[in-house]
Image 1: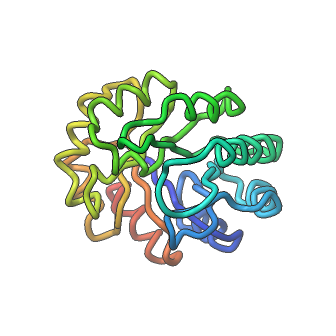
Image 2: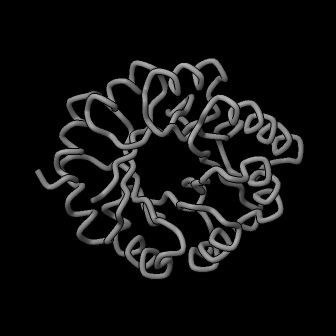
Length: 217
C-alpha cells in the first residue's frame, strides 16, 4: 500500500488530513516558502490531537539551504525542543554552496535526532549530482528522501524519481512530492514505483480524493 503524507500548517489542517485518511503529517510553518520550523506549542497541540505520526520540519528560514554555523545551532536547538513533545520524525536538509549535501552539518543535525526517522527534504531537488547526493544521504542514515526529481512537479520529474527509486532499493524510501494531486497521483506512482507520496493539504476534500486515488479506490 502506498502511504500518503500531508503537509500542514495548523491543528485544523492536521485534523482535516486525519479525517481525509492521510497516513502521516508533516508539520510546518510558512509553507508558502517551502516550510520552516513550527512553534513548540503548535507541535505539542498537533501531536496531542492529530493521533498521527507527526514529522516536524526543521528549517530556520526560507530561501536557500546553505546554512551558517549559528543557523545549524538553532536547528539543533529546535530538534531538542521538539523531540520531547512526542514527534515521530524530523524533516530537514542542508547543502554546501557547491550544490552538494552538507554532510558535516547533516551529521550535527542527525545526532540529536538519533532514534527518530529523518526525511531529507526537497533541498535534494537542487543538488548538482542526485546520484552522489543520494548515496551521501543513505550513508548519513536518513530514512526518506522527499523529491520531485529536480522538476517543478513530481509528474514532470517522474523519470528522475524512478531512477532514484532503483538506485535506493531498500536502503532508503523515496517519497514523491511536488504538486501532487488527485488528478496526477496514479500516473506518478505508476511511473516511479514510489511507495510514499507527499502533498500539501489544500482542503479536506482534495486530500480525501488524493487518498482515494492512491489507495486504488
